[in-house]
Image (tube, rainbow, N blue to C red; front, side, top):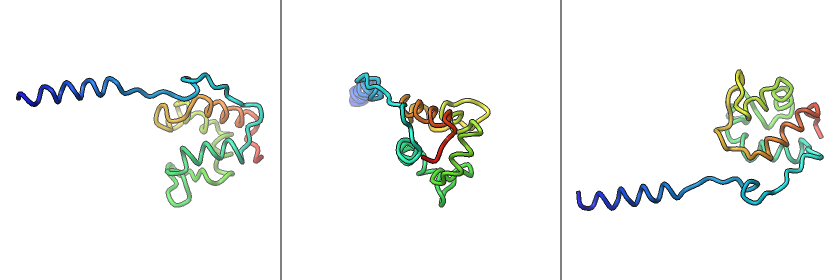
Length: 118
């Protein structure tokens, strides 16, 4: 019992010191949405955050997000952004805080531009 109290105190203090901060919130970085392209920004966001679960060999929820046509269909249906922003009836993905607000803004801009293959 004597050894348990210091361990519990340490774990409580260690857990209280952990935080999750997004880079743009910490450093006030501007988000560039002036020229969002599928081949650069959108593909990079999807590759870094989505395709590990949504790919040809593991199409989570039936989505292969390496395939532009699947991405475009999801974008134009409203569920690419709906899922990212956790808006029903779309399946809420990714887990909360996975994408930065800038990444969400870039995806949203690309979708509102008609999801071009640029």
